[in-house]
Length: 336
Image (cartoon, rainbow, N blue to C red; front, side, top):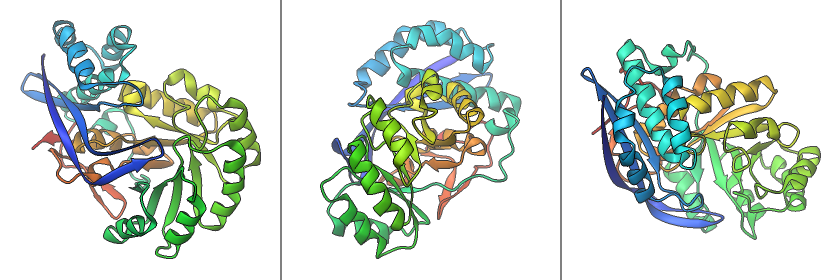
C-alpha cells in the first residue's frame, strides 16, 4: 500500500463567521492510499480551536508512513485500532487516514461504503445549508442566493433574536440554530421559547462545552431539543450526553474518522439520542464520506463543499438539500 499527501487551501465563496472566528480560506489535507490499482481518499483540515496545524498533520503522518503502508491487509477496524495509539493526540490526522482506508477497502470489495457496512440508503435525511454570522442584510442575501429547505443559522451575538426574526420574513424553511458555545443557560432557555415560535427545529451547542450544570438546566427547561457538538468529541463522550442533550452531532475529524464515528452514532441510537453528523469546511472528499453515514442519521449538516468558491474534488451531489451518491464505489469521490 502506498501513501501520498496532497495539501490545498480551499477558498470560500463568502467570509464565514461563527461566534469565535472569521475566515475566507481553509487549509485542507487529502490522504491518498493506493493498493492493487485501487485508490482511497480521506480529508482533514487545520483547526485553530483544537490547535491543529497543517504542519502537525503532515509531520505526524509522514513520520509513520512506513507503518501505515504496512497495514494493507487489515480490516478498517484493525487499521484504526493499530493507528489510534499513535494518533491519539491528533484525531484530525487519524480521521483522514481512516477515511482513506475505508474508501480503499470498500473499492476493493466492489461496493459503495454504506453497502459494505450493510446499510440501506433509501430514507436519508436532507442536509441543511449554513448561514454564518454577518449583518442581517448580508445573511438575508445569502439565503436568497441559495434558496434551501433547511438553514443552519450561526448565532452568538447580542441581537440573535432580531436576526432570526428578520430571516424568518424571507423564507418558510426550517431553521436550526448553532450558537457555538455563545450563550449562557438562562439566555438559551429564554431564547428557546422565542425561537420555537420562529420555526426553529433545535439548538446546537448553545453553551460552553464544560458547562455541565448549565446543559442539564437547559435540557430540563428548553422549549427546543438541544444537540451536543463541542460536548461530544470522542466515543466516551456519547454516554455522558444522555440526560444533558437530546442528541449528538458527531464530527469525523474530531473523533478520528468514519470507524469511530459510526460506533458513536450506533451508541447514541441505543441511548435514545437523536443522531447528527456535521462537517467542517471541506471538499467533496470529506463530504462524500459523510454521505455513507446518512442511513444512521436523523439530521445532517454536510454543506462544506457548497460553501467553496471552487471544489478540488468530485463526489456526491446535493440539490435543494437532497444528497445523491456518485456512480462509484467506496466513498465515491476523487480529486479533480
